[in-house]
Image (cartoon, rainbow, N blue to C red; front, side):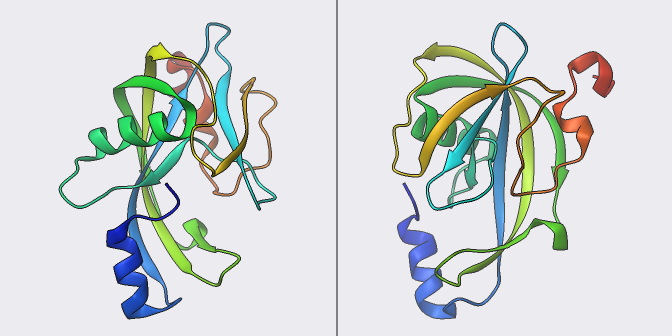
Length: 153
């Protein structure tokens, strides 16, 4: 889903002005410890499976929903890796909509499903080694992508 009814209604009221968006992102590893990234349509950068938190939804519920919608995978959030935001997490979409994300990043475990782009947002879903990450849309700190031992978890 590209934009929910809730955020569409907000956009009708504020136009393209800056919105602060509570959001979530998932670090999902395969059996080789590679990290899953998505390449969204109409973008020049990769991203983690991620999205906005909807009204009445907890961040943990949001990450489960977003990962399913974008990847076809059912996940369980294991732990929070970090919470990030600020000017570096601002983005202007092609249509002019401005956002600043406050992102709760979860370490997630796959419990079922098959990797497939289920929504129209993702063009490519691909796993990358943590030492060879793609160019990302948001400036997550390196520790987000390190294995549990290296992160100090």
